[in-house]
Length: 279
Image 1: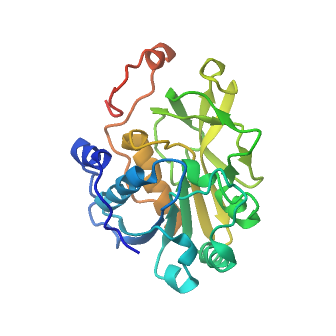
Image 2: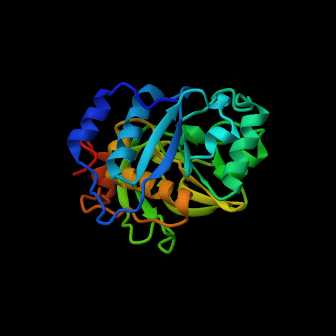
């Protein structure tokens, strides 16, 4: 395992755009293992962005593996949370990690640890029932879809949960999935309206959700198509707070002041290419 990944242009922009506010009297950093190395999205660009986001927060120390299939229960034991930027799409039924690693990860979370993932990392392992229960929602073949990337507003539907407590609604430019395959026991924290004129479903769709899995927790941020989206401060906040909650069941990471506020529909439609995420 290594965290010596190349720093991409997206990472440099993230570093220049804003340093994450540091917490006073911060608790001991949580140990995080990031899974990457395969994805139908650009994992080589997004993985360094994730590493920098977590490390700049001051709340996590990060190790990275590009070979999740090699992990054992002993390898996972030192960590508080595992985060996935890995998927086997379009081979959604492929069980590429093998039975031993599957069991090690499930027992890791069931025993009280955390698992977090975002966007395409949920579109995998659809014949692995425990994984589907853990992540709560997936890309359902023949059912799920999305329109073109565009700007839309996200509403917080659960203000009492530690991840979203005190969080305002926000706007984001992203790929909005609709009609995802959802498990029965999920807790939806945020939704976005999927407009038909954008190729959507014409209804509210879950974009942030979490699960309880044994004594542990799962966090699924459906948003996050590319490195530009990952520079959105609300996306960053959700990923950080969701990962901390998955690891501990509590949240100490603050909600920053420079928040991407919601916009009227006309302003969303009139967005110009290259417009910065945080205004």
